[in-house]
Length: 202
Image (cartoon, rainbow, N blue to C red; front, side, top):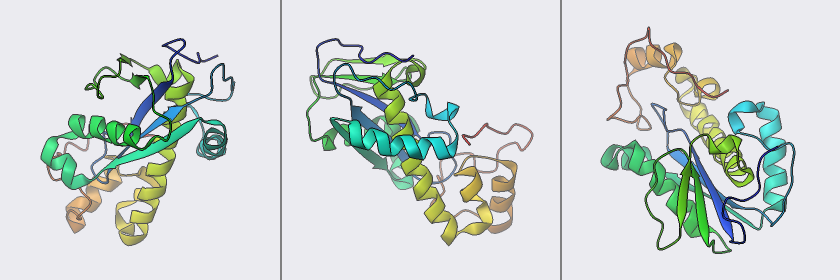
């Protein structure tokens, strides 16, 4: 079972991002503050859950959370500041929108920049260890998936409904055939080596 809090006794926000490894689309991040002593045995890293289960849990998180928010950084901004900085900026933007101000921040991964004067800690695979990070991973993933499905209606040939912008063979073949769209990240290796495909989140 995942743990509720890292900073015991503080109002703590968990943060995670989605879409960092994609060739197209914005990067999304979420920040979630859960109630003290919150328990939910169903919460887990979003990558370990089915798509249907993620959306069910999104409703539960939004209902139960003390506060939650989603931040977005556009492909143009990603190209300007790089994907690491963009991922962190998306988390900061999510934190900015929280209606309850956190007293500490915990972040999935190993890189983060200070958010004001708040204490923060990075936790590798934190979305499989802490409830608030797992909740943030589910919100970031589902809201980004919704966004990519909308873009797929505009550009169906890239299979964004299926690959969500990740560098699959079908996605790269479409780039070769049709070129890049305004939603592609121009600083990324869009064509890459088709023998070395990235894993993408179902």
